[in-house]
Each structure stands twice: as C-alpha cells, then as structure tokens.
Amino acid sequence: MNRILCLEMRGISKSFVDVKANRDINLTISSGEILGLLGENGAGKTTLMNILYGLYRPDDGEILVNGEVVKLRNPKDSMRVGIGMIHQHFMLVEKHTVLENIALGYDEAPFFFPQRTLRKRIWELSAQYGLDVDPDKPIWELSAGEQQRVEIIKALSRKADLLIMDEPTSVLTPQETEELFDILRKMSSGGHSVILISHKLEEILNICNRVMVLRKGLLTGEARIEEVDKGKLAVMMIGRQIAAAYPKADINPGDVVLEVTGLDVDSDRGLPAVRHLSLQVHRHEILGIAGVSGNGQQELVETITGLRQPLSGSILMKGVPLDHADARKAHTLGITHVPEERIKYGIVPNLLLYENSVLKRHRDAPFSSWIQMNYGAIKDHAGKLVDSFQVDTPSINVRVKNLSGGNIQKLILGREISGGPELLVAAHPTYGLDVGATEYIRKQIIELRDSGGAVLLISEDLDELFMVCDRIAVMFEGRFMGQVTPESCTVEEIGLMMTGSTIQEE
Ligand SMILES: Nc1ncnc2c1ncn2[C@@H]1O[C@H](COP(=O)(O)OP(=O)(O)OP(=O)(O)O)[C@@H](O)[C@H]1O
Ligand SMILES: [Mg+2]
Image (cartoon, rainbow, N blue to C red; front, side):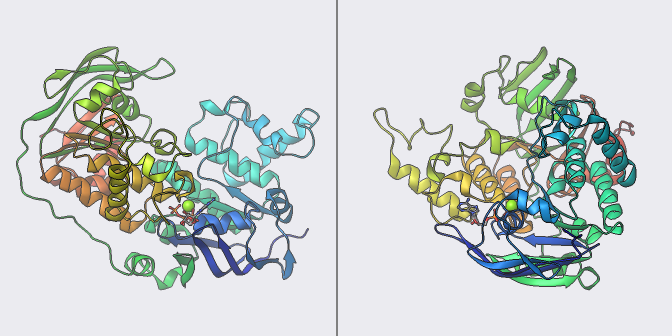
C-alpha cells in the first residue's frame, strides 16, 4: 500500500440500539495535517474514530484512501493501510518491557523476531521524532507520558501514516503535553497526519491546522485554525460562550472539618509518598492541591478516604480519628470521593445506570429498608441525577460501560456531590469533560462550598484552581511548598513551586 496522501470518510453513519452515534459524517484529512476533533461528551467522536480503526463497522458510508475505497473490517486492516490509533487507556502489557511490547504487535511470532532489527528501528524512530524511551524498561516503571511514547513508537514501527489520538493529554502533565506536541509537529512535518480528540480548546488552537466539531452525532462545524479562537470554538461546540469566572458567595470559612497532622504515607512501591504533611479544610472552604501528578497527591487522597494505611500522623474528621484504613467509616463520617481512576474504581461497568447511581449508598434509606431494596426510590434518584448532571443516555436502564467516557464521569460526580457530603475529596474532577460539563461541575463544587460543605480539590489545571479555590497548597515530593490564596499569588509562582522552589509565605 502506498503512503496515505489523502483519507476520506464519506457519509458515515452508525447507530447503537437506542443511539444514533454518527449521522452522515464526511471527514477529509491530507498528509501533514493535524486535525482536531471536538464535541460535547457523547457527540460521537470516539465512535467515528473506532470506525476508522476498524473496531466498529459503519451502518452506512465508505472510507477512501488516496481515492480508492478500502474495507476496514478490523484493526489489522486499518494498520495495513497505514492507520494507527492510541486509545485513552493504553493497551500495553505492564510486566513486559518496552521492546517486548513493541514486538508483540507483529504478525511474526515475537520469539523469532530479530531483536536487533527491532532495537535499531526503535532507536531510529526515537532519534527522528524525539521519542525518548528505554527499550529494556518494564512498562509498569514508566510514567503515563513514557507509556504514550511507547504506543506512538509501536504505531510508527508498523508504518502508521495517520495517527488517531483519543484525548491523549488527559493523562499527561503540562510538561509532557508540550513534549507530545513537539513530537506531533515533527511527525506532521515528516508527512504524517494526526487526528486529535481533545476537550481542551487551547490545545486544539495550539497544535491543529484544522478543526471539526460534532454535535449529537452530526458534523456541525468545520474551520481552519486561523479562522477561530476559544470563544468561537465554544460557540461551535455548545452554542454559547464559556464563563470566565464563577460567582462565589462571600463567606468566611467555618469550623475545621478535616484536620491532618504530620502525615507520612508510603507508595505501593514502598517509597515515601507523603512526608510529614499537615492541612486543614474548613466548612465553606475549597482547598486546592496543585502539583504535578505523582508527587504524593494520590496517596494523600487514598489515606484521607480510608483506602490506604498511613505510617504515622493523624487524620481527624470532625474531631473523630481516622487512623486505620476504613473506607466505610470515612463514608459514614461524611467523606465522599471522586477517584482519579474513576472508570476503574468509580463504577461497576456491567451494572445498569440506575444501579450505579447508588453505589456505596444502596444500603441507606431511602434506597433500602431492612427487608428489601426500594427500586422505585433508586430509579427516581437515578432519573434526577441524569437530568441535573446532564448525563447523555437513552435511559437509566443501560449498562454503564456503554456510555461515552465523559458521561460516565458526570454520573459519578453527580452521585458523589448530590449526597450532600460534609467533605468532598475530588481528584481531577473535570478530566475528560467537555467545556459545558466542566463549567457545570465547577459550579456544583462551589455551590457545595457555599452551602457549608468542605472540599479538597486535587488538580493540575491551574486555571481551574484559581477560579474555584479559596486556598491553594502546592505539593512537591510529598510536602507542601507553600499555601497561598489565589488573590495573593500568580499562576507563574505556583508553577515554580510545583517544580520545587519555595516562595515567601504570607
Ligand atoms: N458500544 C456501545 N453500545 C451502545 N452505545 C454506545 C456504544 N459506544 C458508544 N455508544 C453511544 O454512542 C454515543 C457516542 O459515544 P462516543 O463514545 O462516540 O462519544 P464521544 O464523543 O467520544 O464522547 P466523550 O467526549 O464523552 O468521550 C453515546 O451516546 C454513547 O452512549
Ligand atoms: Mg470519547
């Protein structure tokens, strides 16, 4: 097969049982282009790309490469014509090395595949595109950014001319995002094309040449990047501008809700993750924790929510000690948790939507009495969640795994926030959400604070922290480098603290 100079999708439609996910979509991309694919959660972006990668068959429409119709019945067919796809959840074998993972994808048995040739190929690709990875390291030792590079090398080593990336930056630090964009720019000047799905409008503006917008399965807009700005993209996507700031009641913080003193926690690998850390969160207060992920945030959150045993130090929730890992007790004391890996820990994929809407609370009134579950009350609750958190779903009777990525998130956030918790611990609550949903979730978090709740918000998005928080603590290597108020500090100063410098505290 020749290189892909031009790829066309013509009149593509795809329905699932109750949803028309793609309706008569036309898409064209030429060699060297970086095309942004935008759209609200559930708009049909992943479905369209899964069709291009041979994972789904379209009900209607055709795909042409260099003017010739191609049949893409499975990913192998797609790879053969030069299409590669990197999913949001990487598909690497954790125990194997980089080299073994790259070898795995070849038709030839990896056992017989000449390692020397492959090693040379990896080395060439690394040098050409700046894809820095150690071929002999096992996958589990690599950061998200490094794993993504392995996926890119894997696709390139199979001669992908067109690379599809589904929300590639949601797992990356700002630094890693920049590195990825450098790689993509090099690829595009070498004649590769890229289709990039992202909810971050700045990124689309920064890296793409052209953008297409989907809405409820239809292609609703298309533009060259010079013709648009953030405001225009938002209007194309959700039909209106996005908020620059969120109204917040002028309330002084109340009593201490959570008090952490001298906390030490180890990571899974037995290394110190949280080091002698202390913090307080009050009623009517949102404390933000800024920091590059991997600096102990996850271990801190897990310890506070009763999922991880601390080595030493104390955690008091409304004065009651939480010194043993006991998630049930943390829940009973009024702590709710939106975990970072929510698809893994926040839902049971094979249960129905309404069943997932009361996870952890299914034993509580009104969902259950001492003899039986009250399905009426559960379904009623699920219906309200779907309405108020705008979960895009055909009904409350679908399996949760069939919802789009962003809609699963909205359901989990809705469930946790709507319980009226005394303390909400939310890790990256707006990851993967479209701009409209992001706005809605931020408002909900502020409303919870206004009505007397305490919030601990872990985020890497500094704009988000500045817009939402009353105080921001910056975490680096398990410690706080400083605690500031958004009014007294600049984004640049926080950025510096995130990499380990201290600034004068107030
Ligand atoms: N395997 C499936 N079975 C049933 N419905 C599905 C399936 N895959 C997707 N859908 C539905 O198709 C629609 C489009 O989903 P898709 O995952 O393409 O959205 P998306 O634009 O990628 O959204 P997000 O930004 O949230 O990732 C959604 O309503 C979703 O529930
Ligand atoms: Mg998607």
